[in-house]
Length: 380
Image (cartoon, rainbow, N blue to C red):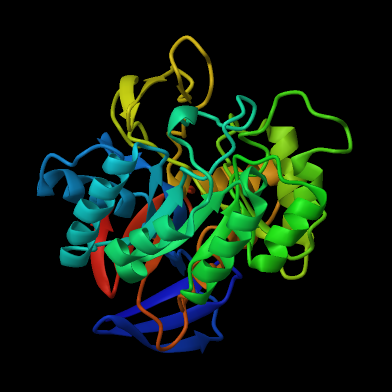
């Protein structure tokens, strides 16, 4: 298969795909109008559910798995981390066991697990939509147990190191040796505590600016301390709700201007994302109400509980809100998270042929998604 397309940087090239891989990328000098754009498939580090399917509840059938993953393909996502939030110990083990079996048998676009909890800060200002009663201190034995279940599928863990700093550093050091990444999140970590977690191997902050108190000291707050760590990446949710546009613009531009860029984008999507109706959904044991504005909130509280943002929608909203180039926003939602996960990803010879074709005249509009050289979505 050969496709002539324009990259997001403006270069025209012939892209040859053979089997699952890019066989050859040949630049072309002549200008050709109305070519599709080609870009690496989007990779989302935080998917709690999608297309009406909640990954934090037992999946009813293979069809539910196929539907959710197909909907992710239809929104440009060729790779995602299935995210489990804080839950009871027994439920956590069962979910990990059942889902590991499913992913190993039929991975589709799932790259593995992101465990967001239970090692979070239970304080009301930081817990978000998580149940504080099920939270725990970091525990090396639990890490070893989880990895024994998941094997190499355990990719990312979000934790709050201040809950028990010594134990947190112990699990971070042990996990990093097994190629598990650690992000800070739902956390009050600042100053020396944050520096020690980073020195132990923590490499990012999960949805920076969220899961933090509404009112904080003007200088001593987690947002400024995270930004002040020069090697710490941070994911942002570009839905205009988790961060108001002006705050998103400031954070995204600061992170993106670092060299190398520290900006990552994620949806933190839950079951209401790409679903056809508003109303009641779940996020594990939590009931969530989808509002007319697309927000996912705890009924009666107004607290956000994930998002209904889709990856393809999110990358263009990030571009607009931050005022950055589309190419930069796309990298933050594709090749950069892939690099974090030690994946070779991008329109490069030898890489897996995971890419999107976009309309040059009707944007944002996804023409097709390819995964491992196969067309897995085509616009009607």
